Image (cartoon, rainbow, N blue to C red):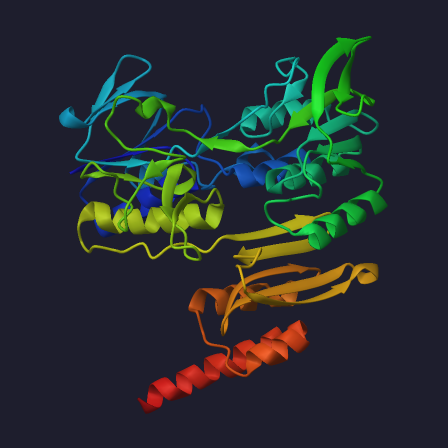
Length: 421
């Protein structure tokens, strides 16, 4: 049995290792299109601030880890999948036969169609090669513009700030991390960053880049001009599915998968940022480009690929935890709430503290918190366990900071009742 995995990120590596645990005799091949050993993109900011070296970004630290696991790694780009022949064609002209196939190709950064966006001083921060370039230029006093203040942008923001660069952020939304935080929370993060000396422009678009006097000129939609030594673009990502054209594998925003993470073609699975899988909160199928989902997918797909059990994907909860210059922010589930749903919040901007709970009937369905790290696990647990809050709902609406009490009370009650039954 030959299991082939396209993609050497967390989901692909996790799947390969679990395949080996489940079957000591099978052949396992990972095909990745970068020249480095498998690494974590989430570790790149730590590399930028020199907290780790390049090897610190690697998913597995031992040089012989994959060799000992008998997992073969091929550093090539997959050009085409031919399902009827169970074959992959590679860019170098070679081909690989497979018995089962896992697509874990992740996503790629998307640059908006702005004039001058292809100038060499405009970088992404997505690959280790990108991080090397930024590391060479991010120095004390260098002027840097960060384009985009979403989740990835805010992670990069911290690294750029700690390099000593003079940092300016341009975000088209009306707040920072608009897909993760409501207005109060996003603007609280903005205020925190501005207090550190970072200049932030929200509700602004960059309309043009140009080069003059060895500096980049950045024009905003209000005609203001910024000057920078370089720009880091963090304006979103897109699933890597273009190479699937003509393969017969169904795609929308990502690869469509069912409850076993299998595509429409038997024996071909998809996981991680490229998979359009079940969302726990909505019951709909969407792409969740977050690392916890990627690793969960990898484990479940491995179980189904070996055929030892039909592991069902019951959906992943949308969860984001962000550390922005020491301010911890998180959001879970349906943090925006639902129509006719109730909510509770407590807001203390002077102390940079905020909590917002969203309810649907007796259930907690979403949450946002800033500066309240002790509640992170409890918020996720209550949402994911779908425990009825009972009388605790009214108590939480009155005082959302009693969330820990609510969790302990309801989980102990459920456990007690289960034992009686």
